Length: 178
Ligand code: SF4
Ligand code: SF4
Figure (spheres, rainbow, N blue to C red):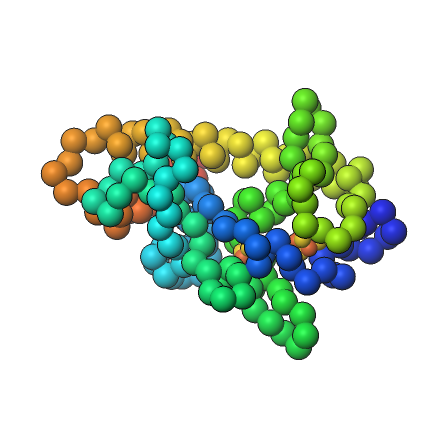
């Protein structure tokens, strides 16, 4: 709910899904691939790494992974009537679930630069978002470790497809041993 009692996304033109590049980690890729039943390259696009120490080192370059986009924004954003909606709500990337919240000094706050047309009622989301943001941090740490492990492997050929298989296997075994 927003501070006026409405759910903010209901009255918004999904500005966030149209403007941002959605970078994803291994858990995001796993959930989307398994949940939608499509291979990762069906929804991923490659970007040059933002952080050279943590880019995925593959034959294609030093990369980060993001969701594919079309002219109107994220590939999973679809127009229905005169509104736009996410078509993968159950398995959407963690960053999409977090937005526009973040933790600062142990306190849940809304991002300074958020695109939402109204303010959210932060108190209402406090418990849910704290749990989610903690899990999100854990998954990004897992991803960083996984990329470092991959980059340290001495392989003569290292296509992105092999990295994706490695990442899916690592997440799969983490989930089954949870
Ligand atoms: S996955 Fe869904 S919520 Fe995330 S950017 Fe795409 S359409 Fe928006
Ligand atoms: S910009 Fe904010 S209000 Fe609009 S769809 Fe995104 S999260 Fe919801």
